[in-house]
Length: 65
Image (cartoon, rainbow, N blue to C red; front, top):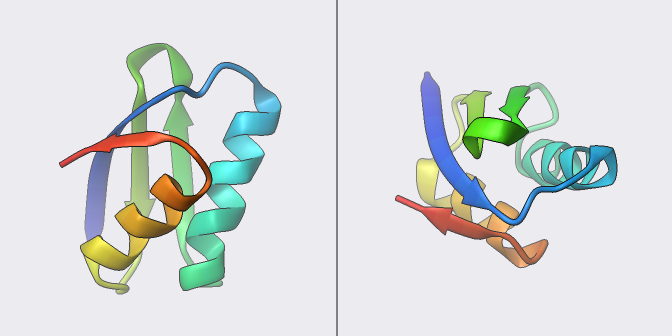
């Protein structure tokens, strides 16, 4: 299942790694594609959307549903 999130606050490669690791902490097999300039995170995962969103938010980023 594909989930698309709008994520504010990602400004660098470290941010991308933090978001990717947060998502993969919920689902180790998740595929993550990030477009920083569009504030867009695409996640291919069977994990619940809310769990993925919460994991990203816990890294300090603002996630828009």
